[in-house]
Image (cartoon, rainbow, N blue to C red; front, side):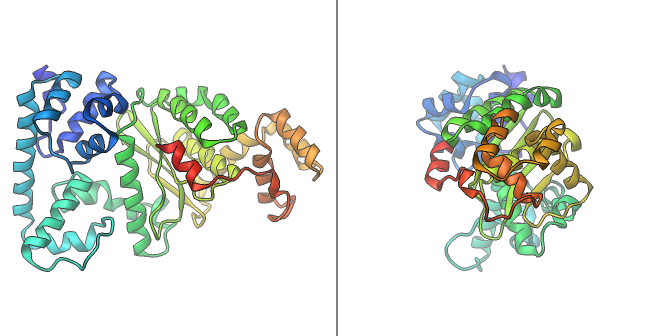
Length: 364
């Protein structure tokens, strides 16, 4: 077992990185780990570095993931030493960490004393699991310069908000056990994913969507967007064998939600491991046009386009058509509105809308 654990033990990376890798390798679910540790907050804390591995958790990790209890305690000790070394090397660049690397807001003013500044730098290193500004820039900062991110953001604070949203999504994706990423398996499951649009409530369709995507190596996670972020969905390859589909439920309507799902699947199948962030102000470049076309064809099959274009704007006609093509009426209405067949104020009673309570209940 020592060799098995050693292969995933980078002594700067958080112990949570080793926990996550071994959970994935050994098929240990976050649910099982939470059951043994007490709750999901404890699992999240171990994975994101905010909780230390102690005597109790080392026993649970040893039993479920292998390695000795002393291995896990030493893993924590070595990481803390590496973290302190990184902080000491930050030196004069500590202020730069605060200027360049965004974090969720906390109460109080910007730290002023050297001790408080280093404490805040430590928090950023833990949150992003990086030891230097260069490593943060390579993994996250460069996203801001990427066409698929930068051109959809109009000013810097939005960049920070989207980076925070993406990182929160990555941390949630750590909790999702998936099979190795496979575009072919995702494409094979597209028909079953499409049929989920007919299910009314998020608490019923979201677990099924997650399960189908996990079989293809995609962790589906839902995170509300922070202030300043207007994204509805994003895709990102979070490891060599795991993709993430991040959803915000921003508009809380079935036509918007499912179009986003199919749009993000389009990015994964057509554009590989690049990072895409999609919102209302995302420009319609080639990549977005291809993902939009993919989503439209998922909703209205190409061989039914002519019939759709001539569809009567009557409730029963729209419901019959939606049943015949196998999607919910709300998705058909969304396409009719988007393509200018009807106005955006028309036929909205056929869409399904959800409250945040319904969404939050489905994502617990």
